[in-house]
Length: 186
Image (cartoon, rainbow, N blue to C red; front, side, top):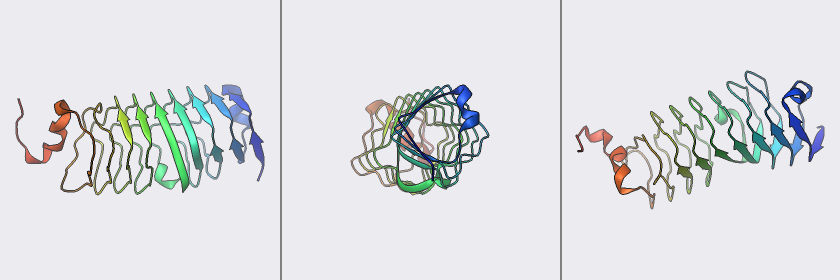
């Protein structure tokens, strides 16, 4: 496989990208929307102001990748290469994406929109949802042990269907744990 290291890419360089192993590279202002990124490998890479909406990421490797201010709607991360998958998201829009059955412990979602994201059967142990919007996100048989949801908003998590050992919540956002009971909290 072709290997690129310590390269910087901007929006005009995206057309030249080929299936390769990209290590310690930076991508700024690139649009990967509706592109096929299957089988690409990204290790220790940074993506800033990029658009990945509806990109194909089948068997794409993401290893210690940082996404900053990226639009990533409709991505099926569950189709990505799961070995050593790790990333962090800061000020990203991940609406309608899927992390189904992924082991993504310690993942940080900071200032992110996670509307209608599927976290079914994902392992989110020690994940951080810092000032992130989880409107209609799906948590079903999800492991949230030691996860931090103190600053998360609009989540609905059924404690009977999810693992919540030492999960952190703020006193004022506990109502998301009681939605199943169909009660009114004033």
